[in-house]
Image 1: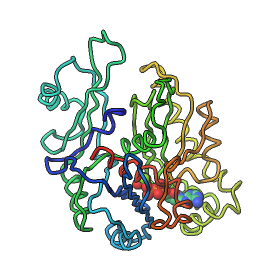
Image 2: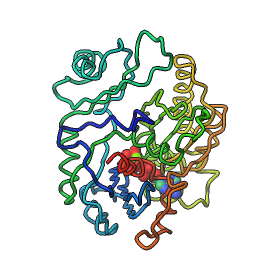
Image 3: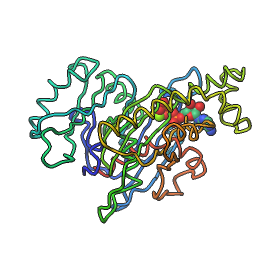
Image 4: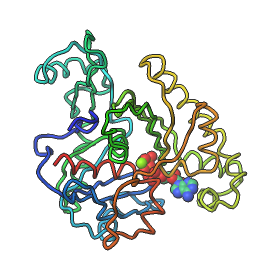
Length: 355
Ligand SMILES: Nc1ncnc2c1ncn2[C@@H]1O[C@H](COP(=O)(O)OP(=O)(O)OP(=O)(O)O)[C@@H](O)[C@H]1O
Ligand SMILES: [Mg+2]
């Protein structure tokens, strides 16, 4: 099941490991909106059998809107995969001597001290040796994922409070990659697929994940997102935050919005360009194209400004591409409206295939 190592890195205690189940809810608790996508396996085919999206109104929290989200979605799944993101989560690519999985698990706790911004006893940790790129390589890259205990416990409690059993607690960065793997499975004839950079622009952060031939090579979060663009639009166009949000979404003043958001987009574009440069110089990976998702990227000027900075094609991709939707259970119009924001939820629900 390791067509992407990302699929195996989950941050659970023993009770969070996989169990047999053919329906799974991917629950993405974002900073500005909560999304849920249910995938059911019909034989080997993953089918979207449920969907709901709710924005978190100013002054409210995700906990306030999650019960309504569940009501809206009328899901049949009893289990959910959720994710964590932000500074209390860590994903690192650590060079280590080749060793067995068992040895690795023991060794990583000592090694991880160097890579974690918090005490190893304060966090849940998972690791996965990546496939060696050269058979004779003296070191193996190990993917290390960690999250503060308090954050994992909070998310588990949140899932349980909705009457769902937590299947696994993931990291946004991995869920993003897993959504891509679901929509773009490896070529049957083994033809290399080249390298892509998935870029999901959320409200408060942007996730970048570079995959070369389906394998993870680099990932990072940048603390810039749609909220920063809204603030810039409000400032530059002398609007209050509600009006600025409306201006971003209405499409009626796109030129002014793009100009107002330009300084934020420039910062984001520079960080992305730096990341791609790093990948090319340190990993020897040439990224062919950048694939955009996330509501933040809907802001006018985003695609164009990123493309200018990274000097290669930047295009939208749909995390629903190639997936059948059960129209008797899903509001297809709403699903279509929010598709750009669903990559993480789809990636979480895609773990149904590992069950
Ligand atoms: N039509 C639109 N035009 C421009 N911006 C939009 C549009 N719809 C949503 N957004 C922006 O998208 C952002 C929300 O996107 P998304 O749902 O992907 O974020 P999130 O998952 O809640 O955030 P994060 O991942 O950072 O926690 C908000 O900043 C919002 O302003
Ligand atoms: Mg998000």
